[in-house]
Image (cartoon, rainbow, N blue to C red; front, top):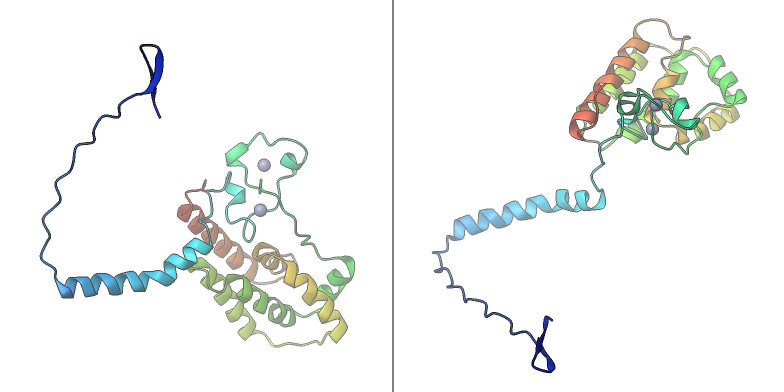
Length: 216
Ligand SMILES: [Zn+2]
Ligand SMILES: [Zn+2]
């Protein structure tokens, strides 16, 4: 409320009258158009509901953080020590990582003892779980690469049930980047590591474009 000083009293300032608007003439209704508009609104509802549940990801602060926490690069050691002078151009992740993704010594031994087909078969369901339902084209190609590779190989060894259970617990905690890392280490022969690294790079570019993040 605006106040003004008048004579010796404090009084309300008169509110200027708001001019009245003339109403628009009623347009002729078209039942077909109304029906179309209604069905379009209904068709959009599931997508709108999903978008409301999942707020859009903000742009990544730097190139290495694109796709955090699933497909970003390793955490930046310079930032962990205090500051990273590369800033938005840094190729490592600048966002906080809380999951412990490295294999412990026992799991490393289990993985070492597994044949490639066994390891691919153990990783694939987790890769599918993490990428299922995402709208990014490149996540699909990532899964397809592993599926194709698995189809080419035959399991040649068998791990114990306990070993597999232990590994499974770790795989459940791992990100897409962590799982891909298990298939790009030096133990792998052939083109698989390079194909997977290229697919990851394309996925990061796709995500960077979608969220207007720095591209590397
Ligand atoms: Zn990250
Ligand atoms: Zn950095």
